[in-house]
Length: 385
Ligand SMILES: *Cc1c(COP(=O)(O)O)cnc(C)c1O
Image (tube, rainbow, N blue to C red):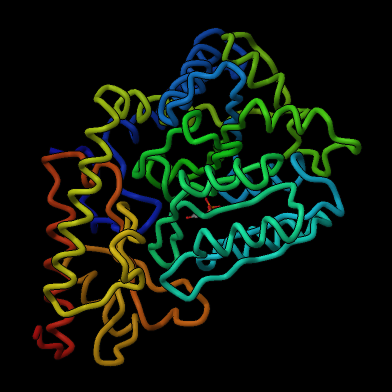
């Protein structure tokens, strides 16, 4: 039996459903943020984050800071580029526009490479763009939460290392860490940024970044100081290094309860081989996607190789709009998300299948979501072909 109050299953692409033990960690008694017990917890959480991203390179540097995934963009824009630098943003939907906006806020010049909705920029186009101009950074959205499109991050990274080896590779993996495999060292990534409330399965409130040795070198070689105070790596680097060495340190108070919850979820995730976790996400995703197809529905991401494993974005049939369908699904105890891509938002809905909803065999969240979708569409007169 779950210790949580009865509630509809939250099957959106973050925040996701949380495990009981993770939620209970939020009720931890108050601890000093510089006392030995908390330093130990924070230090272990930083080390476990390395393991989740499969990095053993001692030069890799994790940051875990109060905030949400969005703060990760500020960290990149304020520390790894300087005003006037050029960045290339690969666009698969909503989040690339926002990341581009963030760079522009810091005086950085952005070129976006756009793909049609449901697709991703192709490698030859990226190669051409990299050869035409010199970019300090290329960004990719690992899973575009607005479209359910999965990027080919490993191949992209190989390409960048081959044709533009000085360009740093920044992976917006807010909706990918925990549900998609990421091999930080082997793939040669420079920044992976994420948030606590998606595949990691911890309540919202934490921004997590992993930076490569190369990214940290680039930071140290800046000519101008970081262009943010709170999101300054200069301010946070010694704090993270001290915590990981289990030593007290202070720049701004960390959210101690959230760090306890993060420690609990990372401990759970790492108690089993990561390969099993990713296989469970692939399996649940296939089940959801096959059910969607069997209902005669189309996904935004049509090509199987473009489809994320932690979520599914589904076009509504018969010109139905999301507000006509979502309440029917809710009546059946499941919450789906509406559309987010600016051009087509009312025409589709999104189902998240990440974390305990797919890894805890006691939960039936994914099956319940599929049934709720089928019945919810039936209620507005949709006949399954
Ligand atoms: C959710 C999300 C963000 C923003 O994260 P917040 O925690 O909402 O600030 C950024 N990028 C992607 C790909 C996301 O899915």
